[in-house]
Image 1: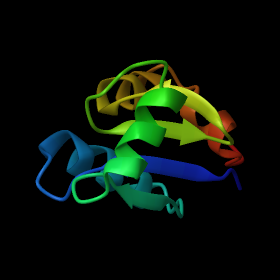
Image 2: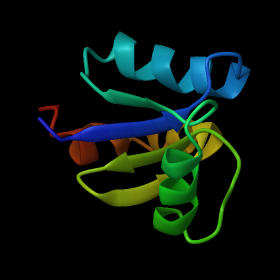
Image 3: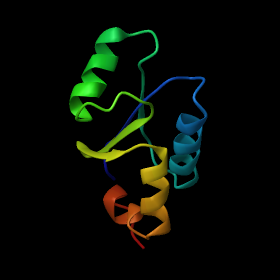
Image 4: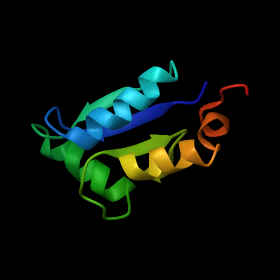
Length: 87
């Protein structure tokens, strides 16, 4: 199974949508709250190539984008392979 990291805030609807998709797939993920931790937000922006909105999602260290990009991968049938889920 892939290592999944989500930089998020607790009040963000897009973050909740991304979490829900991963939970439906049974995927464990590290949820990194950037609201109260400026250093974590800076880390997110650096890793995400300057993107400062949440969520920012990484699968095995690869930046896949936000909630919309995660959902697009799912619709295209590409998410399971990235997550290491057998078809």
